[in-house]
Image (cartoon, rainbow, N blue to C red; front, top):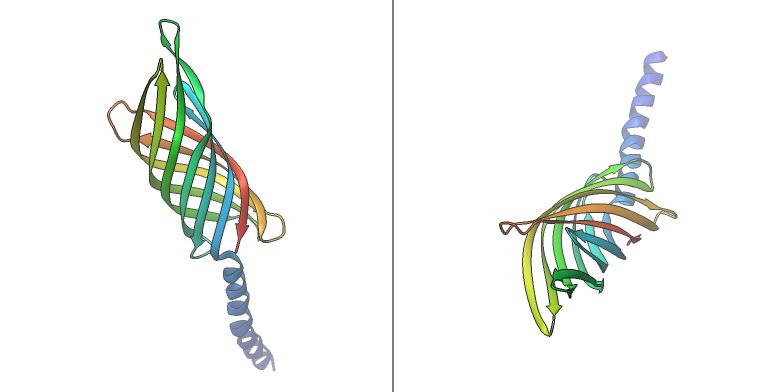
Length: 180
């Protein structure tokens, strides 16, 4: 009798466990997107940007995402002799591989690594110049979905620019995120 009960339990588990795992995977995979604000700290320049992301989560732990941003807050920096230069972010584009560490059904820690490009413009005394910069990017963050679809995401991303002496930028962002 005990053997029959154990066999019946094992058979039931063979059907129940995969069904639960499949339901959890279906709930945590698929397309997601978001919009938010990013504060950019690049050496002596502090800029602000509106940012959009679109991604796909292949599994509860791995995904990819694209990111685009354009400047909405410029900065003035002193370039000497009583002259200030206005610096603005024209655009930023990047692609990332994303790792997720699920803490609960609706909360994840996030780590990402990718490559991007940024364009800035500076103008002073009627003269302006633009510069493009490619960067190796990496960062961490967290997200929480309040109702399983709509949530908030916060993260930090470091942009290490490839050109000699080009420096880096720390980007802090907060935004709305949605699972589709």
